[in-house]
Length: 291
Image (cartoon, rainbow, N blue to C red; front, side):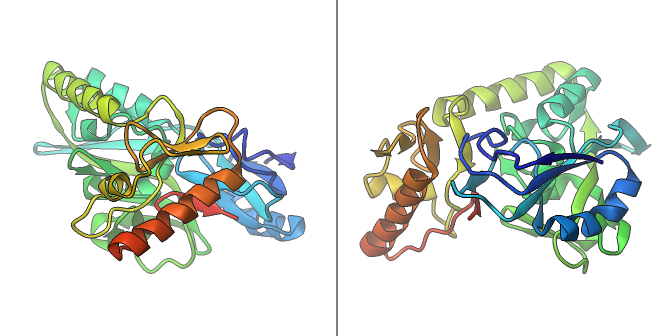
């Protein structure tokens, strides 16, 4: 297990904001997983699994966290076939873009709706990422996780899908996703590529996917779009202290290059207060807040 003391969240998140955690532990084998609880107790912090750092907004002060990074032997490939179903296994630490490229090269369809999501497989799985009608949880055959009960293979029937969150049966706490197995189908490479390209161009035209951003700031209320609510509330393009709600899509909070966590939290708070005052709508954060 590799240890880094006082790692910077600003260096490890896609929005480039945040103070220092207590330590970062990199898990390199299953024996490391077994001693994680003890190491976290020794270091005196709460474990937090970190992949590429998307969907995270961290406060600027020192945080009582132990960052957990996975560096197990990576696995990516077809796990099994059954009729027209093809089961693809991918390790948690593999970037989703790599998995999508594998699917395109091998004629595997199902994941192309998620094109443009910047995270790793573990994060996409844990947060039930979705776009263009595709949702991670709906595509899962099973998930290998580590919890206080050791290794557990959780099948689709025991996975509880919620908005931007999955629950893995009755396992306590927040199990660590190690591998995901997706149920895909075969298709022509040209068809998958065309669909992925169209989805990417559509997303690029509407979302600031090349900006320093954590992704969507707020969850969509039932039957509504958070971006539309923020638009009507006058927050599209609104700036403060080097942070802004994107002029492309009002529900994306972006770092203009010199932003601060304080400015980010102020903008989020003002947006929530305004949406509640003007429309009676309570916006709930989709971005994971570490404070």
